[in-house]
Length: 539
Image 1 (tube, helix red, strand yellow):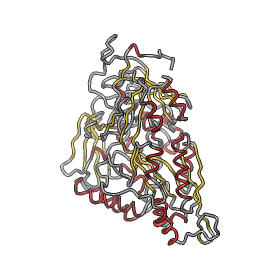
Image 2 (cartoon, rainbow, N blue to C red; image 1 turned 180 degrees about the vertical axis):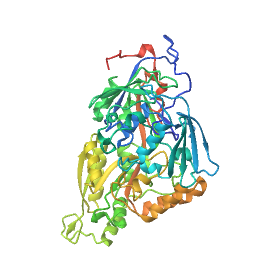
Image 3 (cartoon, helix red, strand yellow; image 1 turned 120 degrees about the horizontal axis):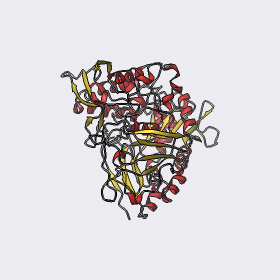
Image 4 (cartoon, rainbow, N blue to C red; image 1 turned 180 degrees about the horizontal axis):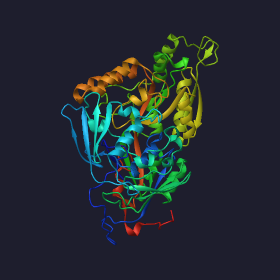
């Protein structure tokens, strides 16, 4: 049986690990023990990107693709430290109120120089209320972004920053392509479908509903990827992805179900990697609904849920019950905060005290003539999600709460969330690299990912204090208090931390999935000449 490797480390979201050099790779034609240029890798995606515009993208898969075609000023390495990328160096002011970046020579895919003007314009667009970027809040501490010369840009902060590089990490767009575009029409910009590359790959083609094809970006100044081509094959159906992997039609599938992983462990053609990460499962409550406005009611619903069974039956043990929006891999996780236990009797007692009783004997609690029935939406498409939703319904019905499930396609589910057309949302979320849950729980984040309209003045205050503290050790008690407050006044029932299982065809060499994405070190992947299957144009 193949060993399941456990890789634990804090890295940039789907970060691209590249080596410095002259952009060239040496080819070895016959040595199968050493990397050589050539070959096509095919990676299965469960979803299609919404848009490839970092300003407005809302899906994780779009972020994954963009991380392969767009570079940033700095990148986080496997040592959990920031390293130069477009910026060759930087200096932090002694009072931590400013950071100055010095850009090295860099070009966009069309050979236009990438300069400080691109950095400044990207910052302005991310902060522009007309654009309404869901990532604008990350830059809330930045007062200004000023061009000092074509290769130097300085950010200033409202308060001292504990991690200035992290506080200024954002995507870059080509100023010469976006400067004259109508900001109000950002949803129809050409680069939504055709981004200009600054990273190791460029988008060669995008066939909607079928695949995206990436090729090495010839303008990328660092080491060229070994592969000639990466095909991102869109296969929404989980069974189809697994069958394609076993048939050798794709080389990588992430999020392998536990039962499938046990079977694949006996397949010598496939390597399995278990990755502890930042993904957690949760049920988000729409607290605008009168039924869900009381914290004691939301706590009762959380106590009705059997997290141990979810981890055992659905995740096959590849996870653990969760207590916080900040998973254990993050530095500010609360180590002693315990997940809510499954206590149906306590849940019933809390609901009784809140006035929710089954007055007509139909098995569903009611109050003032209103039955407690929840419309739960979730993204369908695989058995694990369907079974998880069924278990949730079973748990809620056991304490007298009616539960109607609605399985939706990803895009439709996002529309429902943005429009507030749900009582509860069963899903998964990837905590950000910055260990900051503001986009989910900040009262001002309803235009980002706080779809349930949660607002708690104490939470906002704790976030402000924690984020302003420059010393991690001094800020930890505040972060822990924040997580305790969110456990007492829950915007969501946090269910489990997921250990992702990634399956890789053994012909694909030097693949290192990690917690921030299975395509972590994609520029280092290679395929020996004898193992190459697809000629150019045959993908």
